[in-house]
Image (spheres, rainbow, N blue to C red):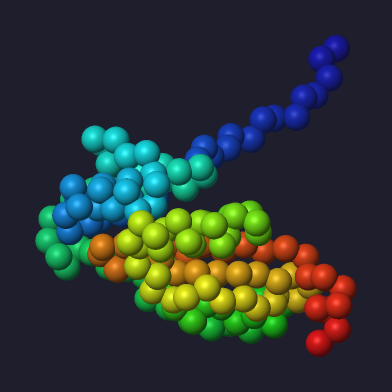
Length: 153
């Protein structure tokens, strides 16, 4: 007699963002030179777990960085959401945050919003907004459990 087997549920693979840009070659150069990505002729820009596909926009109206999201009170902590639009959020290790910001700054990257830190419940975080040539914001974010002394605010 055959025993019932659990059915395998299909899963998604890696999600890759597609970004419409005003000047494909300029964006490929920026993602390679400033962000340190490996960039191919297809438009894939990749560094670690961050992957985007750069594609030439048909018209300037097609380039639309995200607006800020509406604030909400139902997050698991007191946080109500970001104050500015996010086009890509990139998790980085806590100890990699400052070196990455300095690397991008030294290579001529535009820091749209300087690094800042705050807390979400029992976690502390650091974010910085990097702006690409078309105004898209790539947010580098690091998070870790807050130290005991920091929890006593």
